Image (cartoon, rainbow, N blue to C red):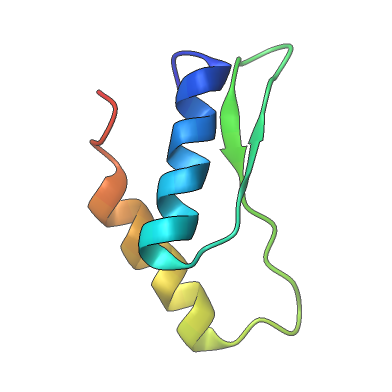
Length: 62
């Protein structure tokens, strides 16, 4: 991500379009990013949806 605003837009896009909850973060060392935190009780289908969403939207803000 170029900046925090872009990270926020990506987090919003992932939620609205793909129903994947992420959090926009600012980083000290590497800058802004979208944080994804899967847990032990996430299903395989949910993780597949996350991977598909990231692949589809990877070039959204280049």
